[in-house]
Image 1: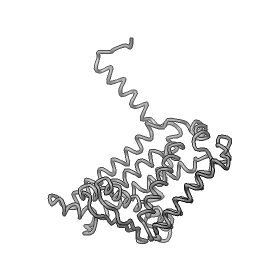
Image 2: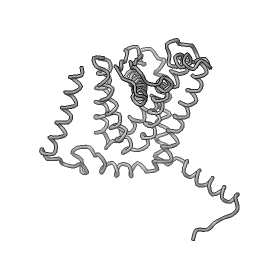
Image 3: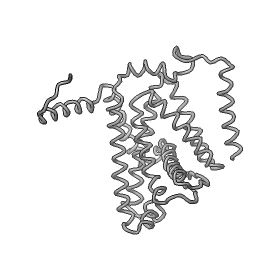
Image 4: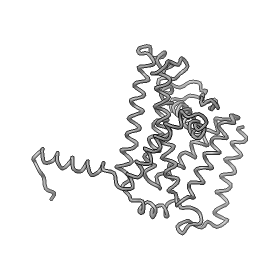
Amino acid sequence: MPSVYPDPEHNFVVFARDARATLTPSDTQRTTLIVAACYIVAIALLWHLPYLSAIIYPFKLLTVGFHEMSHAIAGILTCAHIHSIELDPDEGGATRMSGGIPWITLPAGYLGSSFIGAALITCGFDTNASKIASLAMAAFFLFTLWWARRNWVTWLLILGMSGLIVLFWFVAGGVALRFFVLFIGVMSCLYVLWDVIDDTIARKVNGSDASAFAHICGCCPSQVWGVIWLIIAFGFFAAGILIGIVAFKQSAAQQAEDSKHFLPVPGSSGALQLPPAQLAPVVCCAAACAAILLRRW
């Protein structure tokens, strides 16, 4: 029978001790946090440096894609008809839909892309979780291409990002993929924070989501909604880090061992050797997806 301590002070001490142990980063997690901090500094510097800002330009467009896809997902959940998703070379985007509930679809862009970034940050603490995140992004890419139609910027961006994901999957048993997923997550969260501040708080953009939302509500100006969304986005950012620390306590060696048995790199000792008869359906499925997307084009 477990011991019961009626003393509330003792119970609080035990709870505080367990919480501190849970939230204390391991050595591997400290490395991840240091890398994430370096990402933040590097992104902040590259954001404003002429010419060098081109290094993170594709990832800015990817975050815009997350933003527009979040609008589309919210539209589907509120019975809207999605006509198209477009990405602009000037880091803009548009999701054209009819129907839906604007109260939900409008804030979904900023908050949805921030949530996606936070989820990727959490997955960036673990190699196997990063593999799952990559598969989720692959599904996201397919839906985006379905709605992108002939928007060449979207096609080039997604094909390039897909190539990088496949490349990093093969490097160091997926460790490079983990840090790549972490970078995309940090980039997405920072872009949302900066975009909300730039569009709604620092200056009022009449065509922004916050302005449209303020027009519908009629009770608060767009700057107020910008502050609210900023607080929520920052909360997602912090939650992504905290959940990663709590959920993934494995050391780098444990992650490497687990990674050998979960979606391992083809050709490695843990990889399944598929005979041609089993490989054929996979190839046919990929070819069918490509044919459907090309027909949509």
